[in-house]
Image 1 (cartoon, rainbow, N blue to C red):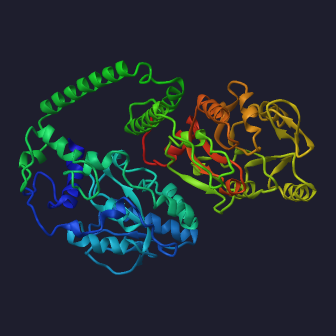
Image 2: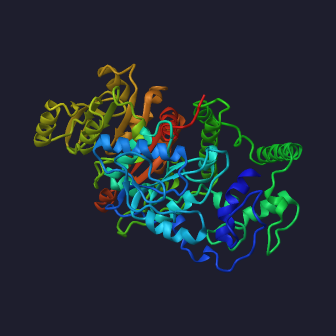
Image 3: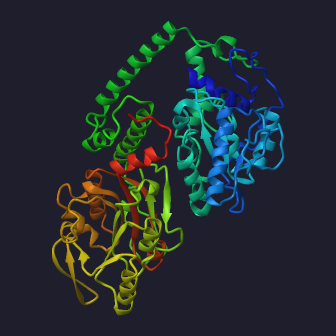
Length: 568
């Protein structure tokens, strides 16, 4: 339909046809010297620009008011923040007195001859402002893809929301011309944190299945796919594409009556497919209570809610499919004296793709943790529990630095005298509050290394600290194997007010690992990250860090990454 035509321009170009598509365009003509010789592999295996790259490039040859005004606002915010001013590298440069112009040029055009030059120019910047002529549903040009291929992060506007259905929204920033400040602040954060930028600029740009659905005209398409777009065109048009031309009627919108008939046919086919799937897999295709909880976060008929619903359904569909697959065989550890690594560590992996994944702090080691949607965490009423520290307080200090008003609690009774003194000094300085009682499955004591330590359940900790009516934004747990009994004894509903959970699992018991992860999923969480503890592994242990996010915080993060959306 319309979206096929919208992206057909780029698909046809890379597939060997001319670029322009539209009612006023001439028929496609086969050209041997089209941009097939460009290195489009940067869209699949990306090469992020260097840390020394400049801040942001504004590249446009058509000085439309929406583009110029947005660029002026970005310049104004950069001047106010005392940071590097965005650079104009095309024919348009706004009219702000602090505009930074390298060279006024009209070479920033959509003609395929300029794409290689544009890609090389963009590679000198971390971000590229890519704005369409207008925000029309399904209208997209090559701007976004050339920026992707350069190794920069595109800052995009346009397409009426369709961009989120084709490209992974973790790989670009969407800017609202009416209020570009949230996107500017996100750019500033990434510009200061190269590790986070590099992660974002390294992700594959296409959503799963998008290459085949929207770009693959032929099975030999350079970016992959099996010719899915070509088959869709054939099925929709009722005839095969010719080798030397695309018939003109394929690029003209069908009359409304035909559109309605096609929609009715598609709906009927979808209903038949759903019924067949339900018959083949009874029970699996109905929404679980957890999935319903996620879907209910946004229940209006807006396009933005539709994007949220589609993402949730994909995540739960993938999770359901994984549960039906055979369990992988355990992996051998390097030392033959060690037992096989537990199968469960290889059976669970993330099902939720986080829009804003950030390592806090941005440093190596066991102390930092991955957070999802850090920008969506409440800055003034934030509450963080860090259970188990072993005298390493990097995470707590980074949280307090990022959110100064946040209440941070370090819960660990096992510190020796030196580390306890360090904790006391940091507590006196206001970095966190230290709790000398551990976490376990029952109130009492546990024995570690021949010493006894006091412990409480999570429920008792929450009650003791006076947080029964508070939301815990981040619950980080690393308690050397006691996590299994601690989570097995959780009272129903206790995790309802937890935003995200970072937990390190220890040991080799498949049953314990499976049971704990099932408990967390049943409480309404989805996994968004998984990271082996390499140091623990090298020292002969078996431990993996898992990160989970609740429906409420995932939705807040999703909304924060789509600032221009109308949700309700």
